[in-house]
Length: 261
Image 1 (cartoon, rainbow, N blue to C red):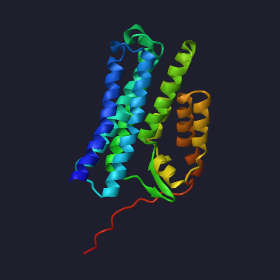
Image 2: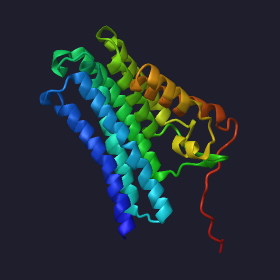
Image 3: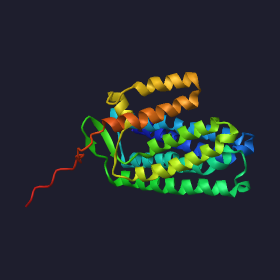
Image 4: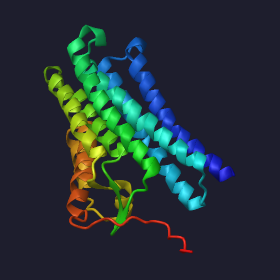
């Protein structure tokens, strides 16, 4: 019982990061933060939620404690952080990057809201599928049908952090890139393309670790935002696509059929 409470508390911490990110996006400028700085801090909060999101599952498996409530709590926490908070980040990125109030730039706000609706809708469908469809297991690791909301959120936050580091004259292009990426990622989340469970593959050494070295080098050379983006794009997208089992049909694990009468 105590172990289950600990795991659920860690899951709630994931949701707390997401709620904090949304609160910061709404109130950051009112608290004296510049709008680009608000975007950066909100993106960092969403990234921070990845820690408890991975830890709760790890502890639940190690302690062999699980429940229907805990499973639903995990889905709801992921929805809060990687769906809703990330969608709000996308909506406000175009106006916050150029440091104007949302109602002072209706065109930019409409661009962000369009990206938010497309991304948010796809992410909610992805989460609903995860509730009723167990991800398939295939050779040498765990894969998922479609990009997970966690991966899509990390791609979004990486690009937002880089866009906020751009010179002011280039930030409109960064904002357009964030929205364009959200529109591209949305169908991938609900697709039938296999995407690797990257943290699981990292632990097992299934994909190469060169992106870690690239992340370190870029982080030292040009700044943490670019290093993080290099890690997310390099490790989270490229290597596992090269290693995933093309041409192999994933095998679903189904319960045995009851004996016929």
